[in-house]
Image (tube, rainbow, N blue to C red):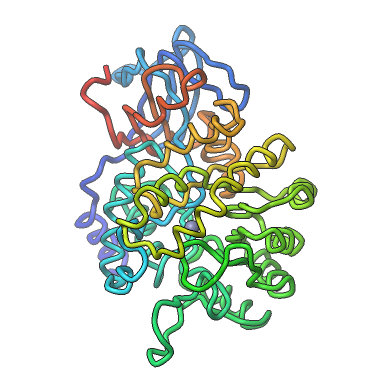
Length: 428
Ligand SMILES: [Zn+2]
């Protein structure tokens, strides 16, 4: 009886969104993101589970009878892009005091809108690091169930932080006695909070190691979590099979987080030579969100960001970009993360041009958003490359991203797990 009911429920809730079926895509050009080789006239075959079964030259690939390949012969195909630092349930307009008027259910609806914008911009996987009340868990599950259009999501739920820190809520006076859900002071309270967010669905743990830009009353360079607290968090999270992403602008916090065994440093703004060397030694990923500075400075005040936030960004924006160049030149591991939600969702690819401006070659930036990001997210054999056994997550653009990375800002075709998400009418 129970099985019958389950089957019935499944039938009734079958998604209106595109479903995967076996298929093929023919690509005029296809970028092998590992080698940087631009292959010509390739066919990607995938099965009914949306998994790639072969990638090879059209001349030697047999397309099963009755199957018509999607024709992208005038386009360049790449694996779906990955953004390892998003906030899909937030918008720039919900910054500062405006954020206090937004309910948790309303935030989830915002996430539905932004998930669609993000996947249609070619980002077929995101790591969402920080959302209130597990709105990101709900969004992830809705997407996985086929009810909502959006990228694959790895989510953190509420970020962990100290009382009064960047991950607390400091806008209200004491008579409201309000603190953010992720506040946990001391190693054991922090361990308990790791267990709690995992209980409610977190795939990854997000913490605030230092002060931040958009929070009230703290400084980006100031340490918040101690080394001891972060060691406890990293140990607990790793034991339970989760990685930890640490928001850290400050020089000392970055080093403490790396020494504590944190897996990725978010923002990394004031990292120094010793921090870069430590990151290399520990294999820690650095995630520099170097696009949104422009948005904060130009649009932040209109979006309701606090005056102190704009001042903070003015102080660290340029330093962060210079340190991005230092870290890249030193050979640190880097993954593509943008802090979407600070700037409008769907503009994620605008960060590629900034990465080129500050020292990378287009292939380096594309690798940061594909194979490197896939490694950090924990799915190196599933996403980030067009290879047998990977999900058929594929995007197509006009032109050559290796000579002009900005073509990634205008994605023409998006497929996720073998299901077409976007196919512009001018895509042949
Ligand atoms: Zn963030």
